[in-house]
Length: 192
Image (cartoon, rainbow, N blue to C red; front, side, top):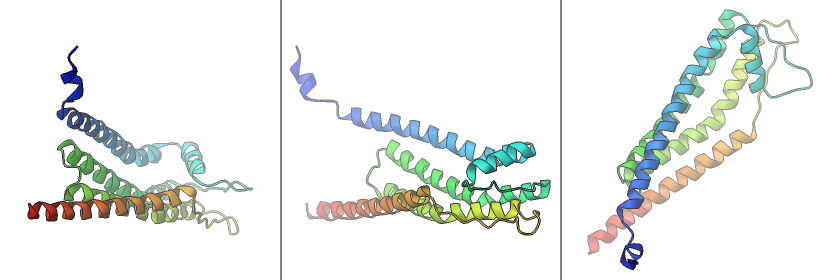
């Protein structure tokens, strides 16, 4: 038995695993971005019943179901109201793409990685505000042509919004800690 081989692991093995994981994550990010961009177009081309059932699945439940008056024009405006959320989602996915690109190049604690984490944290925190506002705008638009007394104003804060805010703050704190660790490393290297 060769014990030298087991006691001295290959130092490049963790880097190779990190590169593989980074490629897989970038593939997942690309798939997520593709879905995020195509959903509005699929909804726009969907029949009114499919569009309404999709909206109902996103809208929080109530005792009485909300009545929608869906016209082609309102459908376009409702989909356009989701564009800020989609843009924010694409920005967040772009940060994840760049983060794993840096990891794939072996830059784990550098300024690029911490900056991507910081921007991703901000994007998640802003998502906690944009998502409820987008949902409110969509409901307002879809009930705009309802008779008086049946129009809806709906503003909800959900557990997902809290988690987005929490994880956004966590990522910003991690980015700050990584930047501080990088500065300490550079400072210590200058003493040697």
